Image (cartoon, rainbow, N blue to C red; front, side, top):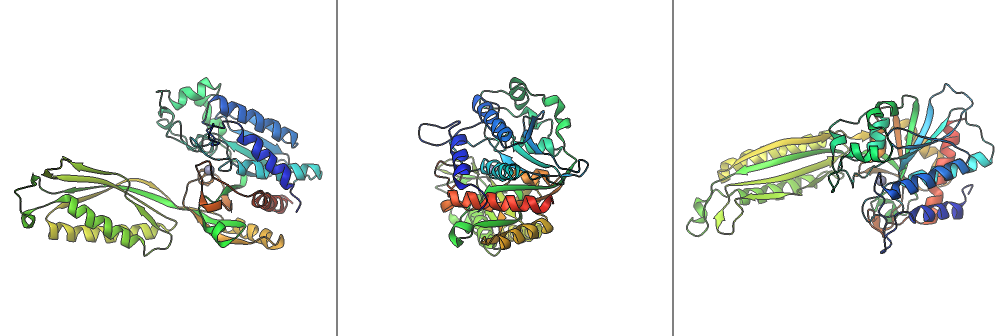
Amino acid sequence: MIINEKRLWSQIEKLSQIGKNFDGSITRLPFTKEDRLAMDWLCDAMKEAGLDTHHDEAGNLIGEMLGSEENEPCIALGSHYDTVISGGAFDGTLGILAPLEALRVLHAEGYRPRRTIRLIAFKDEEGNRFSYGMIGSKAISGLVSEEGLLAKDSKGITLYQGMKDFGLHPDQLGNCKMDDIKAFIELHIEQHTTLWQNKKQIGIVEGIKGIKRFSIKIFGESNHAGSTPMKERKDPVVAMSSFITKVTNCAKKYPDLVATIGKINTIPGEVNIICSEVQFSLEVRSLKEEEITQLMEEMQEFSNSLEKEQQVRVKINEEFSADPCLCSPSLREEIRKVCENAKVSYQDVISGAGHDAMNLKNVTDIAMIFVPSVKGYSHRKEEYTSSKDCQIGAEVVYHLLRELTK
Ligand SMILES: [Zn+2]
């Protein structure tokens, strides 16, 4: 192996000390003291690896290895260095440190890429302080909304103010947009068990699942819980339970689709009153938009039959939609070739979680490389990827960069 396993591991350990809690978990929220410390540490590490560094108005840290052909669009890669509250040492940070190690080796070898290689340490992906999230990659992709900047933290400070207090320029986020990227690659821990269970070293991501969120209301008839016979009831809670069972069973017909009811509200919500109304959420995720459409068509039909059989009224409202984000087939093929040549085991995987890469899709082709998460753990202190697997991830990035910049 070309990548130095020990050196990469010691970098992961060093960065994990910043924001470390007593229980061993890590809390590194954006625009805080921990954020500053991590950013400065990463900036030094990038410089030490031979990169030219700068920050943009969103607080992203950018390190570049300049290419011999200055006008050629660059190859960008990176991930985020914030964590959730009580998070782990690998989510996000490995997607910066593994490519950084690859670049350190390339620098030591005196490699001069034909096109510039740009490593980005993104600001605030997790959205754990301000609910908005992904401010860094949204800024680079020209996707920041004005209302997003008004998101508040638990102390009532807006994201806009948080950025200003950190010495940034939230009024100038337009300057962050990058129009010179040929391809963006994000390495990330899998946050799921597929690779770990199948004992594969690399996951080549087909895409990130799209999301649709619905709010559903079922209206029935409120009445006395003691004196209304079962036969005469129009109980929306009973109708809801049929709906939930049906949607769960329908979802199981699609191998990669997931459907979740996360919130339920019963009205009036008293022990001795048959409800007049229930409201609940339904979130559906899949890489194939048509599967979500099919599922919801089936649920609409089912709702019509519920209305007749149980004498209730069902209203389904779409509240939020994010399209599935497909990775570039040609980049996936490049990664596959690299894995074959390096004799690294791999398989195709789908990402159920969102990542910075999906914003970059707005400005360029993207690819994602997953490495195994032991037991699929993430967003908790037990999150773990072995040093060998980290090394293999960096090794794949190293060969891929040589391929894409020769
Ligand atoms: Zn992440």
